[in-house]
Image 1: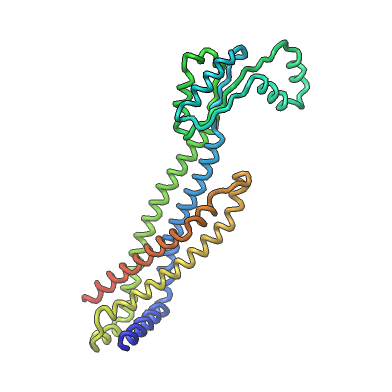
Image 2: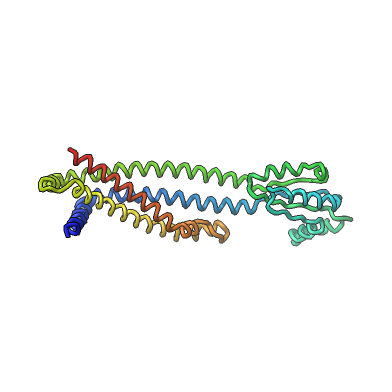
Amino acid sequence: MMIITSTGRIIAFAWKNFTRNAWIGLATIVVLVLSTLSVNILLGVNAVSDSALHRLEDKIDVSVYFLPETPPVILDSARAYMASLPQTKEIDLLSSDQALNDFKERHKNDPKILTALGELDKNPLGASIIIKAKTTADYPFLVEALQNPQFANYVESKTYDDNAAAIQRVQQISQSARYFGIMLIAIFTIFSILIVYNSIRIAIYTQREELGIMRLVGAGTAFVRLPLILSGVLQAILALLITALIVMTAIAFLDPKLRSLFDGGDSGLQGYFLINAWPLIGIQSAAIILLVALSSWAAAGKYLKK
C-alpha cells in the first residue's frame, strides 16, 4: 500500500513540476524536437541520395563501337571475354543490322538523313557491345579491359556515360550531408544536455523551500529526485510525439514532389521510414529518454548535495 501511495505522490509531484515550469519545459521540448528532427533529416537525406545514386547506377554503362568490317568471331570473342569478368553485371551485343534499324528509327522524321543513308552501298554502322558493371567503381577496370589485343584494333570508339560525373557528384553531396548531419546532431545533443540540466536546476531552485520541507520531514533523496526526473521524461515523450507528427507530415508533403523528380518512381524517402519505422522509434525514444533521465538525475544530485 505504501508503495502505491509513494508512486502516486511521485507522479503527482512530477505533473506539478511539469505544469508549474511550463515555459522552461517548452524550451526543453523545442531543443529535444530539433535534436530528433536533425537525426531524421539526416536519415531522410541519406535515403533519397542513396535512391538517386542507385537510379543513376542503373542508367550508366560503357558502349563499345566496333568497325563495320569486324568479323563476327571477333565480336563473339569480345562479348565472351567481357562477360567472363566478375565486374560485369550484364552485357548486350547489338549487331550492325540492329544498329542500322535503331538509327533509322531515331531519325524517321528526318528525310534528309534517311535519303543520304539510302544512297550508301553498305551499312556504315558497326556492331556494338553495351556493358553494365556491378558497381560504378568497376567501370575503370572494364574500360581498361577493353584494351585486350585480341579485339582492341577493331574497336572504333568507347563511351563512358556522362552519368558517371553525376554519380560522383551525388556521392560527394551525400557524404557532405552525412558530415553536416553528424555535426548537427552533436551540436543539438550538447544543447539538449545543457538545457535539460539547467531547466531541472531552475525547477529545483523555484521549489527549494518545498523540497527543503520534504527533506526535513524525512523524504529520501530518491523520492525528491524521481518527480523531477519523471517530469523530464514527460517532456521527452511529448517532444518525441511532436517530432513524429512533423516527420509524418513532412514525408506526406515531400514524397509526391520527390517522385516527380524520380520520373514517378520511388524516391526512397517514404519506403525507408516505413520499413525502419519501429527500429527508428525504439532507438530514438530510448536515446532521448535516457539522455533526459540522466541529465535530470545529475542536475538534481548536484543541487541536492548543497
